Length: 566
Ligand code: ARG
Image 1 (cartoon, helix red, strand yellow):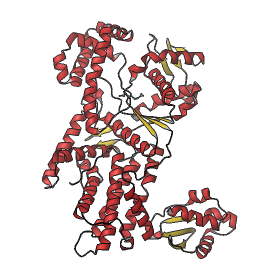
Image 2 (cartoon, protein in one colour; image 1 turned 30 degrees about the vertical axis):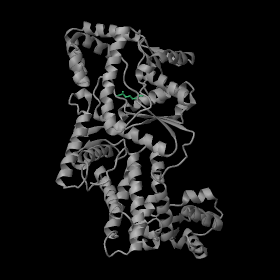
Image 3 (cartoon, rainbow, N blue to C red; image 1 turned 120 degrees about the vertical axis):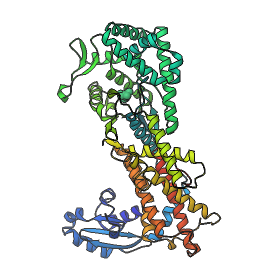
Image 4 (cartoon, rainbow, N blue to C red; image 1 turned 90 degrees about the horizontal axis):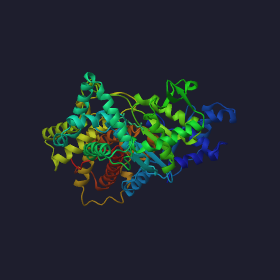
């Protein structure tokens, strides 16, 4: 039973407009008092040669109510539809409860592959909070696309190649101690890497040594390769610890190194197409007609660089996955880089380059300090997550919560709180992390939504034994119930909007508003109180179940888990 379709059909039958035009024009009124759906009569003014308010009056007069529509009202140039509350609530709640965890799912993505590249930390460098931003957004987008039926591949484009590996190998050979490193791989590798830079200022010949080491690595020297692999493996162990905490996984860890043998082809293709030109000894693609600096493909010493590896990766992905979209979740600070290599691919005549999308995000500050490896004062991701978990644990303790497994709850809430913060606003906005906001159980936060969910679950536990599967919804048509259930219906739109704009915050805002409406509902519509009659109880319980299902599903699309009590 689709109410919107029904309204569209009614309008089409009475006017000369076609289905698409009506569907496009129909909107949800800004104020619920103005009805559930509104049709602006302005496009009809020309055809009917009358003023929109007159048309609205006429149509309202002619339009008969039926069992799905309670009344039709003209207001200015609008035709406002008030739907049958009982029918709508009954249809939606029954459908949600029958859907399991699948509410909002669709098959618009069937037979289409979407690649989501995210996280992509640099080997032997700390996984910092900027990478967490990418991980939070990418993981959520991957889940959102999957909910819409796309075949999703999560890719981690590890920064595991480049001249820095020559430096690291040479530093390791000089000062590396396996035993110490294994206790704390990334911190220790970073230490010797920083030491290399300090010493190289005094002894510049170290730079030559590092270059020679990288050359050996590029040439497949056994010892250099073994060390490179070792650095990569121990770094991945650490990253995986964080990924496990976050519940994130990847289908591929093919990083920059994977493409190192696929770059000659790129150079050949670009040369054959006459796109390469020399500039100070380097081979570049001129992009001046697009007002961009040239894209460097080969350095003067013949070494390929970041952009070339990215072009090789994109071609490989095109051939391997024949993608519908190839999404890169990387900070907006790299926008020019993406713009440049996308442009090179377009100049090469690859029409699929249009389906490569840079999904950028802003900078992260913590208590006002900006976070960057270059400035030394790095905020480590594990530390942030662990601190969040500890603080949550304190709050749970202070609230005298009756949650069963406090450690597990603290973990889900603490991590959820951090993830939510990254997905709360339009992603290009810079964010300033603050514990007070992240862990505000009453404000717009993960704990707030998780609390709403737990509250609903506790109501359902109290109702154990009551069979509400055939509830009579005429008992639950209050404004609060109606408004809440209409929101349940809107979940699919939020998921589609999020995918269309690559903005998980549509889902975040959705679940926050849904939880707010749910709070209002159960505060004004008592459920398990003694003086509530059984039929009303049943109808309200069915609504509670539907809402908890949708809160859980929506949070899961953000990568956030729920707890059964809080
Ligand atoms: N490893 C890079 C960094 O940490 C991010 C990689 C982005 N992805 C890409 N295809 N260039 O800055």
